[in-house]
Length: 215
Image (cartoon, rainbow, N blue to C red):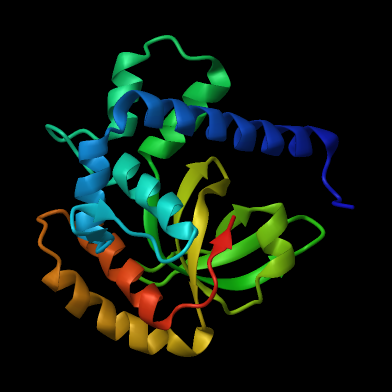
């Protein structure tokens, strides 16, 4: 039993469900085979011109990457969706704006409140002036304090949601990852810092990560 006010519980579930619907609509409208192949190549998931997955989670990572990181004329699929769909209901507009403002990083869980389903995170790549609050029922019950997690956060006022998947690492790897990430990112053949970061951590997770969390 979670000790939330009923309104907070309802808003959380509404945001999560609306986010899933909007995400699928973006995929249907703006993600094509060419983009998936391009994303697969950058992530190292392309073999003999075919997408090749090692884990079930690879397909989710591929879609998140294609939606947020690939750009056409400076716009990703979220921006194109916002531009195309002019009249959005308030909740969908809130989600789209959060997706526009979303970002990936390597976060460290420094506190967990299971009763409130809240996790306190610090951003290890840019530094957080204060801990960030992630609201998530499942992760607050399953993740240990100290876990490192590469994921995408969606800012929504005084808390964050996530994009649905996270790449976890043992806390013992913190210094190693912070040292190794820039080296791998430098080798990624793309001018985009976001792509470099995403590809580097995806490859690091393949070699050193633990089981993927579906958030």
